[in-house]
Length: 88
Image: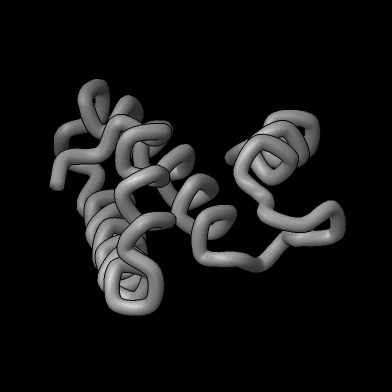
């Protein structure tokens, strides 16, 4: 789980407007953090298939959000990819 302080930090770093908590950039950044935490968990617990299914769902959701952002505004998409060090 992401602590409340870390979540607030991620939201403040990726928001567009001062009261923004639901933009695609914020959602993708939060999903990326959860994915990295679960990936670390999976290295130590290779047979945890329930967590693996959850990880795959998060990856799929992030992928759909990235496709949406690329379709709507490719400039913001490229900027986010560079900021989060995602492959594309």
